[in-house]
Image (cartoon, rainbow, N blue to C red; front, side, top):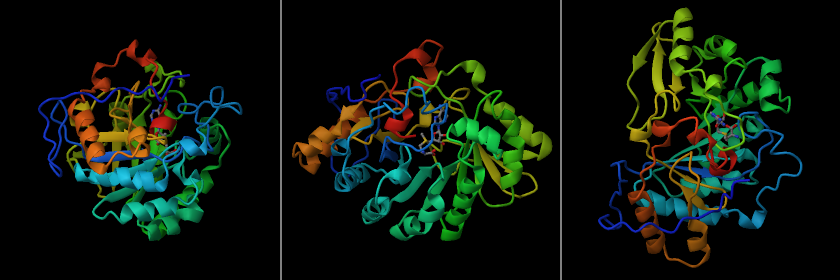
Length: 355
Ligand code: SAM
């Protein structure tokens, strides 16, 4: 297994501004705008492209509770990231809704003020939690759903989880006001690519935004092959042939999805093309793992141990400076340099680093 806690020493970078409140940029002039926080490395699904059963089986050792950042530790780090200019926080995992009392964390993060708080979930527990999440201060949710067909979806989540219960979660989230809701569909060649148009059709006119994601070589266990990737251009062509589309501008600098709207005005879709159209140039995302490692790329092979600082009694100023040094030295652009060889690197698993 990859040693996820293989920590790098803090980089030494000379000329970065360390004024409290000033905005740090990385070596490619990218600002720090988003923070993804993994709140658990556990999941109740075993999606074949993310946590395949053969690796994440009954004997797999997930992190013990004492290793997880507490809600107070997460909130403290989030406050320091906010001072660096982070405006958006996404809670993820693993399956974030498996983390007990998550609403309490959301309440604490909402208390920091001025943050766009979102969460990515497989939707399995959303129907009963949506209202409490909204009341705690969550702004929006993204729900993953790879097919509307139980046989296909069951084979992909590998625990036979029924589509209907995810749809109920989506409805509950909409009723609670966690909108606009985004629906993530990972498209894999020969597995669910035949279901792309049906997925778009189902959600057209609902206000929910389906985002079609290229199958990525995250982690080191999902058996990724380029042949399994369905390029987003192909997805757009398939949908456009049935329901004409036109490209629209991003909502903000660094938005992950490329946006397309239906020409008849009945909504929009997004495509996330990390493989065929890398968007590293505008990547403004940092990732905090469940146990407090900071990663500056989804495809990282090592990170920086912020938990050591937090639990070692470092004052906020020291953590602020550490983040400035890490971000200032950042030069990641994995998707731009991806090859069949880099795909074999022992990258950190997505369930741990946070999707
Ligand atoms: N459990 C939550 C969920 O299912 O949404 C959050 C974590 S999950 C790792 C976050 C997102 O990453 C999901 O939409 C999932 O489909 C996507 N994902 C996981 N592995 C992927 C891969 N190899 N390529 C593309 N997307 C992937």
